[in-house]
Image (tube, rainbow, N blue to C red; front, side):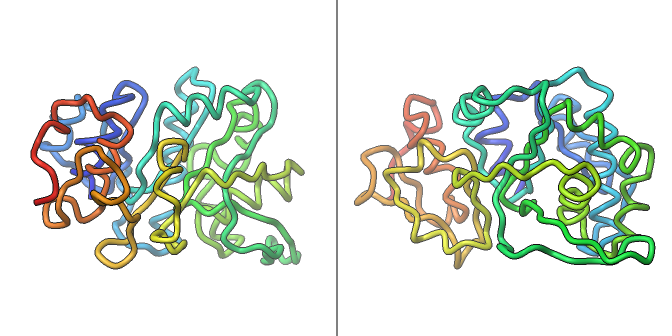
Length: 250
């Protein structure tokens, strides 16, 4: 999965992007100019490992002076230009938690023996948090506290973020339809809108965006080379790139 990212959107903001992994990877280290952080967390999709990694992400962000902490999964395509333009409409010095919901009702859980309700943005679509808000999250996030909070709540990392922000800190989720995850039926998205979307995703081979020679006049790669459709999408957004001069779908 990371190959699709490294060959496409990573190159649009390579100084700003870090990969948080669960192991050392020399090849990835070289390809990203050292922008790899071994979380020393496990590699499962269980609460322990997912929330461990997100806690490490938080700690990494807090060592920087960046305006926004954005989390994306390894099945996301991020339209960097659209992301920068989108975030530019918000004040990073105020409290913002931006994303898309996959569960529309309020979510529930038990935290320190008390029943709590909260809403959360689906991590798989991408989540952005202003630095002002990130600083306020510190008591429940820094230096391993995020994993502890997640274990007490008994919900995964994206739910835990939502709980900390919307319940404990009383900050609303700012909803956007410009973020997309593999939980959606991706082939229903309008190809004409791809260049303005902030994030897209793939669930290859069955759940991918529709992009072919009938929907665009830019370079389209065949599905063997491009099962995620990220290469074809990248060429739709940046048609002048050298990789997009390669032969089309046939």
